[in-house]
Length: 427
Image (cartoon, rainbow, N blue to C red; front, side, top):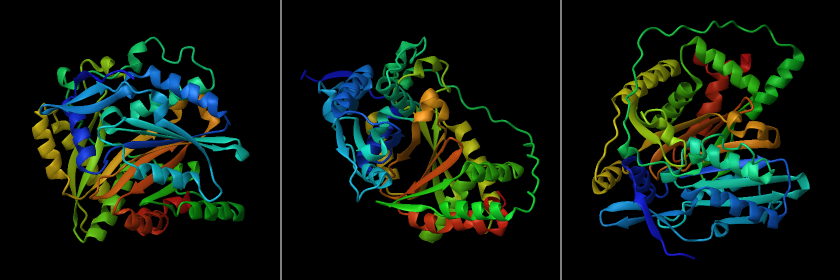
């Protein structure tokens, strides 16, 4: 073991994530589950994980205070100590293990990641649970880490990084880069042509009933709840949303806000939306590495008596305005901590979307059956909503105090609400 040494001071965005993680009981840390159709020997996995961790300097870092500032430091620890392997017992499910991992907080002064590898040898399947500190993690980071791990597992290293080898490095301090504000686009949105489907056959009705049952959601434990929509259901919901000039993301946030408002007995709900900044800087090519390049936009919704589509449009407009107005705040770390401390007492709905994850996996998509991430909510978040799409299937993970209300209302609303014209039923 070598002595810890400083690397660089955390930028303002990184410091905000670090203080939120510290003050809000682990808020923001990301846990990603990857299920691979293959079995591996324990010794081989140890070797692969050691090589994988050595590829990424950010995985050897810890965060420490120097005076009033937070600094990244090389820990000097050996990487394999942060990964563990175990067998999947008959009384446990992979989904329950994901809930467990979300519930375990990375120590603020400890390693910035951990990897749990669970063998299900009877099914010839291996589950990976990668948890990362929010100061070094966003959607891009998770995708890069998983892709390189799979490359090493299956011996497909050639060309894995393309021409830019700096993608393995820690991103630079964004406070030193030139921010380019979002441009607000005006003009009407062209509606998507939507036509009602024909009457389903008896066999189609049976398939739809099975899909609707699967779409009722599942409670995983530890406050985590998931809803899965098949590719057909997802396509139907997208068509319905496009016809009304909204997105699936906007609709689900509106429904989550309505459920959280009902649970709290307050029409006003604060929504925290994660937005990537990797293409927002003039020097965006320098942000291809590992790190946190995500802004949190704070908006308010008044649920009132409006329809879900009205609320979804209000949310879209509020996020567009907040995105255009957002600017990096290059503040002393003491002021960032004070601002984060003020916000930890407020309740809200936290939302993030991974989008489609198929492209991240490349050729490994045929070997992977599950790939999804969940963000640990703050202690007072009314709900945390994480969306991802893999092989056409939409996965919604919800956690936090409002997850129970969300689990009770969201599937019913999607399949029965006259306001939504039952998009899943008509498929």
